[in-house]
Image (cartoon, rainbow, N blue to C red; front, side):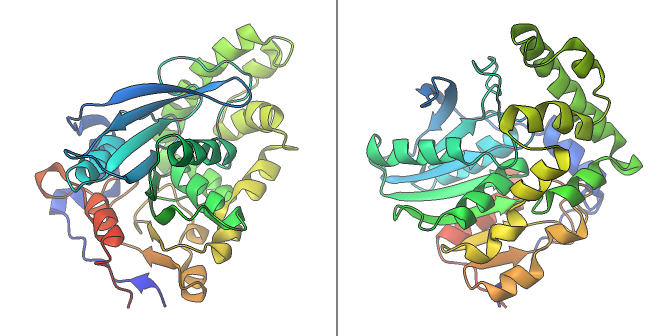
Length: 322
């Protein structure tokens, strides 16, 4: 029964989910030197990959995926990369399409179930970069992408050894509903503002694919997914997108050791996003549910977050189930 008892005990003022989430997203800073590689995809679009390296040459690599409207330089990305670098593992923080500070080339972008780009990156680091031991780490949207990728594959590459994800919205319909509740009003509007800023530029470049009227009809995140995400990526509507891309349905098929850390006071997650049954039924799926941590806010000592420490411990075989 791979359900893990959490030992996370933050200071009292970080026990509030809103405080820990906002502090981690807006105030935390992580110093890390990264080197950018522009990687071209089979459809002639591109991803920007932000690399950082261990002090000595390594054949081990962690691939890190960010959340909604994040990027490879966010503190939660650099925090994972820096800790792994300090323990002999190279890191590549993947910027999803259009998230690196430069608009991507095609009308399509990224979404919670887009695993094709991740698969291409994995092939790249195996065949071109020659890494032999690869770990996957993702947060929020990126966490769902990794879980879906692992569960939908009949067989993952031998080089992928383990995965660790945090604040994973395993059931997208439920998570979407939570984001539209009053308690998440500020988060919802912030996400929507960033998404619309980028989408407006796409609308200008591709007026034949998205009209001004359609753009102006977007008032919520679900509207965004109905008007753009579904249309651009081949789904019938927002609900069809949410249902088909939820990783929850793929968890039973995950075949490598995978750790999910979801805080119980994460206001973004619905009850379905805590896959206790799936963890108990799959010996490869480990679930930890700290009482605190908010959304990606597992603040700990010396600016190394609890989830980052747990990720390192997991790949070092230091975490046991209860």
